[in-house]
Image (cartoon, rainbow, N blue to C red; front, side, top):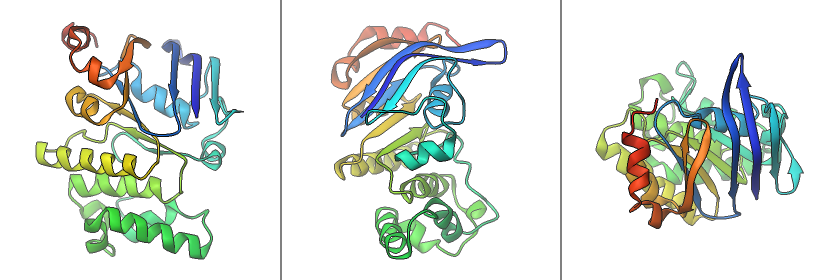
Length: 235
């Protein structure tokens, strides 16, 4: 469904991505792993249209989307739950979800909201509460729920476990499994390699703006080279 070939991204004088190749099929979870600062979030922001590539191609279901603005990428069916959640804290849970589904007609919006609230019961309990008053785990649920409200064909999850306690991390990854089971493909960027590999079908390891390892997640989970990337002192 998603094909990235020879992707380069420059931010100012720095080349952050240096020839990234990866694919996401029409189902399952693909994880991108790597230490902090290797370019994972830059990759996600480029795929979602926040950054423009300096070279290479991005195609989604056969359509070229590299360089399109974020709202146009969303129309193609790609939604991102960004790193750091970036919810609107002064707005209620209901208002955040409405923003996510603002392109849907009334009946479709109501149906999608019900699906999201069924997936995240805590959001139903906090529906009229200000988003900024939610716990970290609840805010992450809202971030993912808001992305799902656009009825995407591909979900980008950027560091969903960041800053969460271990118990909440386990809940978030269980939700990723539920999303996967629903048939929605997921591209997951994550520093927590153990948790990401446990939920993924395929995985890629990034180092220095490049993909350095790729393969079935179950094989990479036991590959000593994965530990080398994480423990080798790369920023």
